[in-house]
Image 1 (cartoon, rainbow, N blue to C red):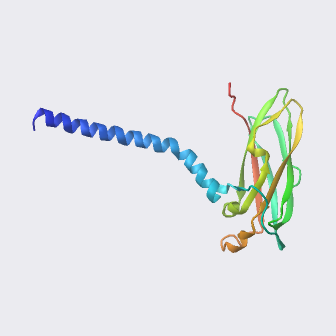
Image 2: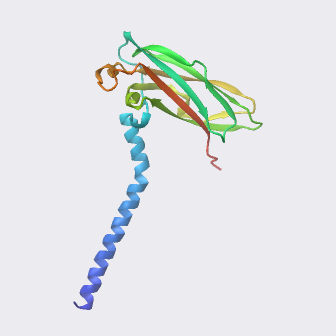
Image 3: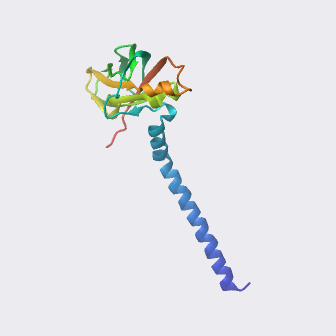
Length: 182
């Protein structure tokens, strides 16, 4: 094989390898937002749905128990707990509950909450209308606040053969210290 054909072949292989590496880096970079979008749309991984407004109808005869859990990451000097431990709601019924947070430190702290719903298979039916988890929370030293959560459980849960036996749903939040943006 002559030298120019060899160089051309090497260049083509090199460009192909560089293209594959660039494609792999692009996919790796896009995987987190794509996974978050997938979870948001499907409820996978306990990600509840975010509703614009309330359910279209309420099934007064079908009730479900919703329990509330609260955790705080060790890097955040806050006390955090649900005001109510649990509520019983009709499917489709709007519910409003609250979590209580208190800054135990001697400095302003910004916290952010992550959330999930268990069992995971019903997360797609748990719809939050409004929640403190959508924004960072700033608390001054010793300050405390009650933070509301507005939600409903979609009556479509009754049509899902995998979710029909679920009688209790747990909404769980964990507060973390927000990343310093400076």
